Image (cartoon, rainbow, N blue to C red; front, side, top):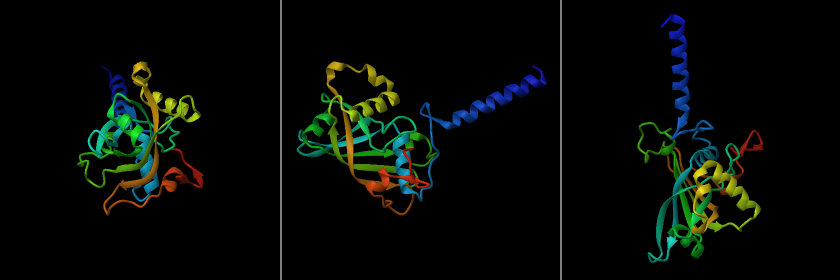
Length: 208
């Protein structure tokens, strides 16, 4: 192999290595991790970049005890996240069944699956995590918001398109009432729902 060929091969491998660093869990991180001193940016980043979390509902079958379940979600099309988590759930599963009886829910997301925590333990405060608490509401079929949820979810989770129609899958959203965010040492960061939903950059609303 000539010197020129070896050089071209080196640069090709280097490029692939650099690009690989940008991919986590087989997808590209669209936005770099924000400064932890900006809680709204951190919170919206966590939600927009993740694809799954633990959704907790109140279970009547368990005497009112909380029931946590790993679920897929999306807050919007790539680069157009709203911060509102949407879900595609079946009533054959306890989570949707619980929500139809009692809407009180919470949804927890960790930075760890993104691969940006390095070798830190997921419980390390610098490995961000967020819990959104509110009401888990089913969206009206064929409504504008149901179509938004459908587009957001099916783009991020293409497999959902082929899930059995007879399993009564429905689109849900979490109507957020409270936010618990840990993204650094010193305890939870103060962040209101309004600050989270209307996160701004240079005076403009940023949908991430």
